[in-house]
Image: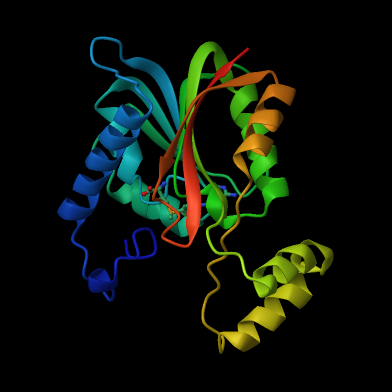
Length: 231
Ligand SMILES: C[S@@+](CC[C@H](N)C(=O)[O-])C[C@H]1O[C@@H](n2cnc3c(N)ncnc32)[C@H](O)[C@@H]1O
């Protein structure tokens, strides 16, 4: 749970499942409110929770619609999500190590949710998944996705690293960082400026309906929650 919500006082088993899943209900409510979406009286048919982790948000979504599919790259997260699944008949979890969503057909979902996930992958991967979110979205469906935009204070060291990183083979970049962090796990942060997100969405037959700033990427980054529909 701490790998998902790394609050300092919750390290080493500090989270308990009840309070952890309660944060999911609150996060979902505040994200929906931020972009002006309400499922009250109009529940969704089928939702995708991309990067579902232990199902913190999938479980909250399961109370608001007919069917939920949580997808995660980590087998262990999917195993834990299944263990904590309170709605096994309507909430399904999938392990998907692929850089696409080919496990789902076109237009399959009327709601796609993805918060605190894309920020940890390079922009080329983020863009690939955004394109996939639009592909699996039904004509009147909506995507709610959070993406950091840029660092608030970008020093010349940051700018050099950002420029160099995509040019280095991933093994070289990783071994440099592992040495710097004395072998501790690497938590990468990436962003895409808002104008580029809007351009990419438009290029892929989507439309940004709303963009609200949020604090998901921490104090060092500006970040937005986007509400996106099909054009
Ligand atoms: C910070 S956790 C957030 C989990 C969940 N969305 C929540 O709010 O509780 C990020 C999750 O994204 C998953 N993830 C990272 N890259 C992914 C990818 N390419 N495909 C699917 N899941 C991914 C990680 O395994 C992790 O479970």
